[in-house]
Length: 298
Image (tube, rainbow, N blue to C red; front, side, top):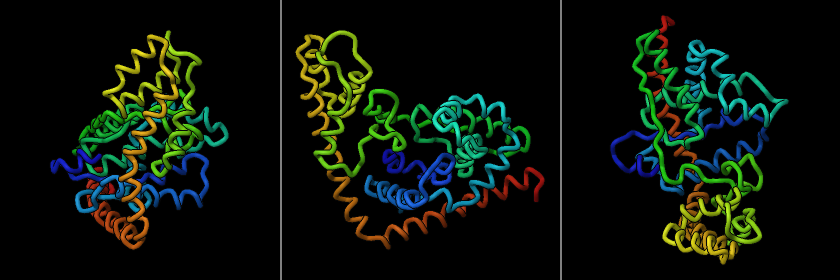
């Protein structure tokens, strides 16, 4: 995210997608708290409100309006066949709503309302990006709009594996993630929880693969040595886990210090959110007005 922001080539917009979060069961009190925490995390990570726009999705209602217009060019059959939708209905069989089905269309609106060409998301979001490109093509063909067909901005750390050994880290899956605010001891405990074999050597289990994926991200210069020890059956998994945990802690410490300062200034955070909404809505209104004109609604 910082690479895009600081390149000077793009106008960057980072959205806390709180409306998306209510498509599955949630705690309303936790949502109010967590969405603010995300903005604070963005700021502590280095996103600069002078260079980027930071927003709550719900503060820009034009997202939802545009999503409805986009739904007129999107079939139910297309949504039903998305692997992400199939996964969600398995995870929440009693909460299969129209909002959940329409999730990718709202995501398309989140992106295209700003006519974004580059989207920093993980590879698991590629099916949704393909829907976004399809929506852009259909709108352009049917109504003469000029939506771009956005592509994914890939980064080395775009996919962080789950601590459970399967899937990716997700706040919705307990025990799968490390909090950005975790202490050194909490990080060490969580990394040590990654399931590994009793002895090293042989074919890697999912947990061992996860451990080495972390090693590639955080201690790349030491991976070769640890892999050799693994193949020689001399690797002590706890030593690898602790080496990874130590580096994660060092990486997060400056972030945590910046975060404390930002958190101590709630008026600043409020102003960032307010300014972001105003700047985003100016762009969003123009796009929605254009779409309504093209569709014959004005």
